[in-house]
Image 1 (tube, helix red, strand yellow):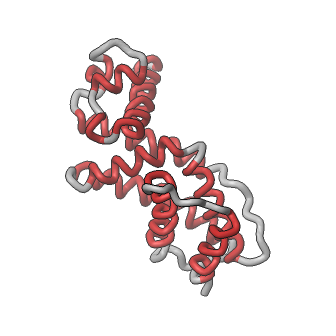
Image 2 (tube, one colour):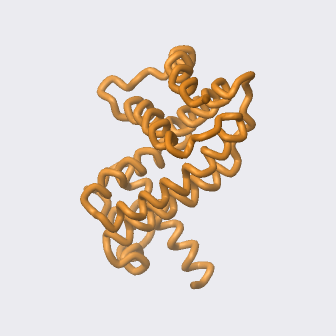
Length: 192
């Protein structure tokens, strides 16, 4: 594949992520992605022939972007493993509700779509497992062992807070003081 082809595929995948976030899964069409990318009609279908291929491209690109961000997590501060875990959760919630908002919404759209498409579900599970690995490593480094069995539950709790903030009818207020008060008991259950 040429460098231009690779760049065009990335541009289309980025536009698919934006389209999923703005128009939802039902709004993801080749034509909508072409418009979002500022490309001539038919461009996205040239690179990704089917809607499933377009969904897969968005999922692959989300994983690529998230892995790049996870490789540069901030150093965790705090006197205890629980405090360091709370700091990581606070960072994640802050990031995914602001700078990462579009990708968060797209990821949730893909999760819903995957409930009806087994072929996408397998890719989503693989992406989830890969994305959780650095989080487990960071928390293990922070002094919190044995996370393998609990990481999905922890991520689900944090994702629930993020989703409610972004999509809830009243938008969950993420006051930092209140959020820490909620996260501390959750994270204190991580320590042996």
